Length: 260
Image (cartoon, rainbow, N blue to C red):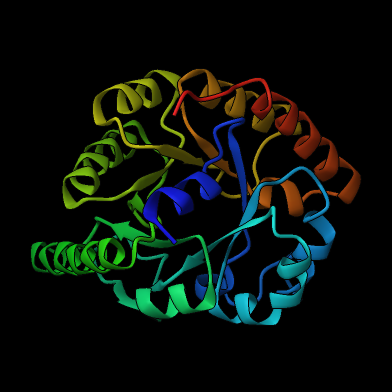
């Protein structure tokens, strides 16, 4: 399979992608709404999502489900980071599987965190690791979703500005898709226009009213993002409210087509 084939599966041209992340166990252990790691696929896979962001364990356990639902894409998280709560550069990042193994499992893309609130030495090691993964992704023709983030930092203006700068580093390292926490409509549009690499926006932890989530997605779509990564703001809500949020988001994503 080619890079272009996998990119088009991950980010379809006839709509904005809705990728539901359910890989939180790699960092959060047992998390509310995800007590049974394989449960979200049957619960949400028949709703209007385009795919899931998953752990290696989930990929293996859900193989039959995805074989029966081949329209759904799978993005495999290949790394982890501890301790995510620390903001003083004390965390540790590492790979948990390989690009070759991801290809063997038949997923459509791989995903890595790109934490930046680390020491200078750790930043260099992080860039080296990302560069090696990018090379492997190019060799195996599978896209890398790279996520610039200041782990555990509050969403202040300074943090948002810094993550925007780190997105440029992600581009220069060769990321095929960049995933970033929503920095606002104007900044999202600027990143899309300047980097000319598909941008997907992360929904983050459960917060605010359902309408706030839908409004943020609307801004994201207006700014030209190719996908939204929304999990906890759907599956941590009461089921009826979560389904309504997803339906409202899906309607927005189907109003856009891409000429690629």
